[in-house]
Length: 77
Image (cartoon, rainbow, N blue to C red; front, side, top):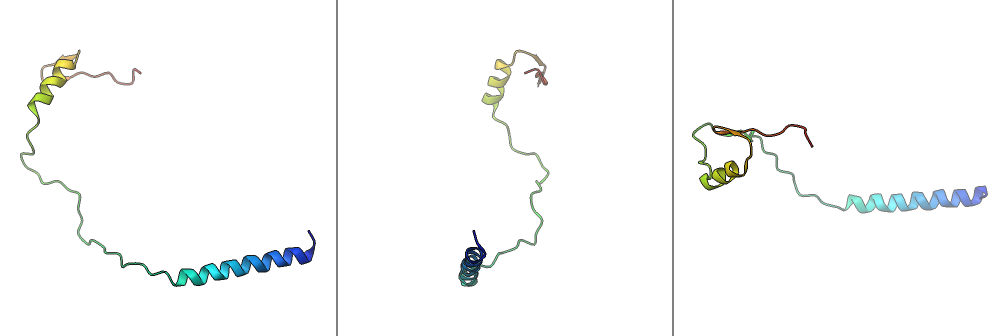
């Protein structure tokens, strides 16, 4: 590739980038609403009542349990 071809490629690339930049100037974005409040904290209280049928099924399927606790394997895959 000689110098003339390289210069032509540079000019074409610059023209493409300039056209793209002008097109981006026309794009309008909706205003972003910011929530000033801090969220994500749960309210302390009694909480929700668990599903008793699910609890019974879990304990029936568990092979190793101790009272109200299921003893599960750890890192034994």
